[in-house]
Amino acid sequence: MKNSLLKKISLAAAIGLVATTAHAHFKLNSPDSWIEENERGDPQKIAPCGGTLADGGTRTGAVTAISGGQMLTIELEETIYHPGHYRVALARTINMLPADAMPLVMVDTERGPRSGRFPITENPVAPILADGLLENYERRTGPISTEVRIPNIDCENCVLQIVQFMSEHPGHGEGGFTYHHCAILNISADTDMPINTNW
Image 1: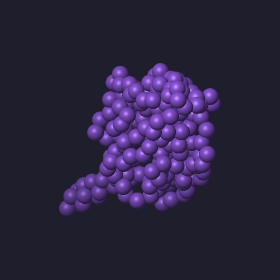
Image 2: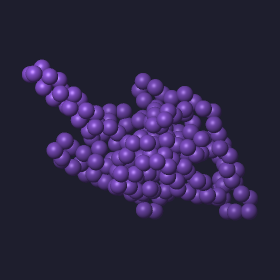
Image 3: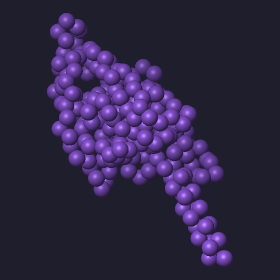
């Protein structure tokens, strides 16, 4: 009887541990991701473009062509819920992508310290295209989408980065409070529009 009770308590504790340590996940459905993603969107922990220490990700070779100055639809799928928001950046090389933001505060909870909300860049400048996108503090999962305007430039193999900043999160060793995905874009400037010289 005692052993049976101990097994039940151990099982309940294990289930509780799994439930409290689950992390948010998202998939990049469009434009095509630069690495292969599984059904949850993994691997996506390491900045700036995903992967993990154990799995840097298998390159897809996918490249999306787009005209400069046009709106680009970004289609995501939240596979595990976590509150927070998204940021989109664009750089000529992966090394020029912005660093991950840090939470404005850490909040003490009964489960230990958790991230508060993250700063949102209200008037983004290069390399950030948009910030504060798809902000969510309800239990949302499933497909979501947004649009960003691509600068009017010529840029072969430009790197588009989409990151999810996670509030109410304890953090993880490989990516802090952020998950990452990237896509490779070939951008051709529209000669009928002004060139974005600040990019």
